[in-house]
Length: 507
Image 1 (cartoon, rainbow, N blue to C red):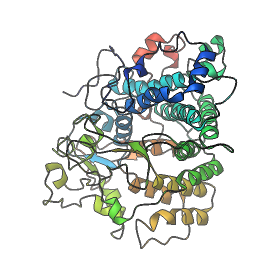
Image 2: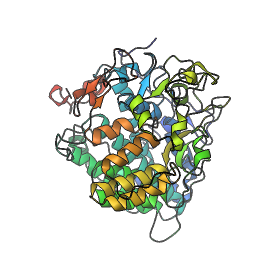
Image 3: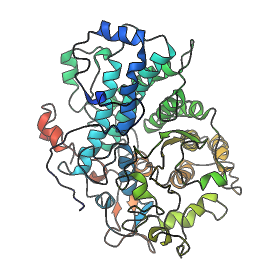
Image 4: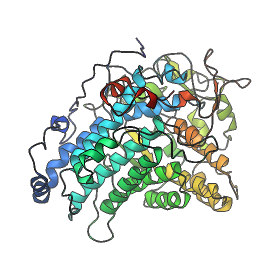
């Protein structure tokens, strides 16, 4: 049964999943209660490897099923991205099912599950990042590569969480398209190492401005990059792609600088992020977007039979090929007809979607449908990996930032690095922001970007055009800055946080 409203009785707990070195200690918030900062720092200096359980717990939480309630549209970070994609116009569905209320723009009120899920997902990441941060001395940064790796990851993940929260609970731009720096933002939660007094922390537990939240994101990213990519000393080398490293930290920074319209910084961060990564060609595009070993993947989660969450998973909903909701045609994710028609036949990515006739040769009901995506694949045991960041996105950020500066020639040169691997007929010598945005829509379809892009670019949606393939009854047309584009602060937070009053609530 699909429900929006529910009683707010929530217990945050970690499913251990069998993830290597992960333990329930991650959610034991009393672990450091009786440790002085000196003792905690001593533990880190002697052997920081005990922090494995903490950092692994962060990454396990990002794929956790039922963060707020036992519902199949709640599987942590990837479910948030999919819900935002569903609010756009690039994804259509064949039937109303899970994520249907997101598609209908009817999931933003404070009593609904979606707003609590999103709040819980990212504030839990922040809380546990703060636990890791507080193991380190406030007087000085660690000197070993291993210790810097733990602290750098924690700062990156905290910035990552704030980056998403501020977009979910406020409009990132004004009506004129400039950054909405004075808008009501979100609470900031600090570690002791941040150096704020109890009074200062209490003062910032309400709705800080968007500008204040941006300052915190940027500060965290600056610290993270200094730790993960030091000017001297050894650089932290991650053991696997599930972990943050310097490239990923630069990638989060590139996303943030694009959001905050700091174009020069976005270009530089994107270039540093994709350094050392290759782009996949035509054959790689058909691998199902489910294998973390893909050379283009920068960051993701390597699923196993112990960590996968079957029907309550990203692939259950997004893939038309699995035995999940998409493959069974309960709610198959289709590409918007207009967008499909705009993809040139010479573009390799057009083959990732059925045309108007569907594909009767496919084995699942969902994959037979007209305009069904066949981008996302399937493996026995539901062990398809999750992708959080690809090098392709970084090339798109570089190109868009240059286009925002009016440098269409340089933007085309940046974009051409991607397009030579996507459409051999592409040969533009200059591109606009709209040109790059179109390539983002095609390249990143279904990966959790379109809803956020619409908000930061001050765009609405229009599913009402003649000949559209959107679900009857949900052929919506919304302007930018419509109140449904942001979530209300969840009921639980309103009840428990005295710093947020009814007057502070979003419409």
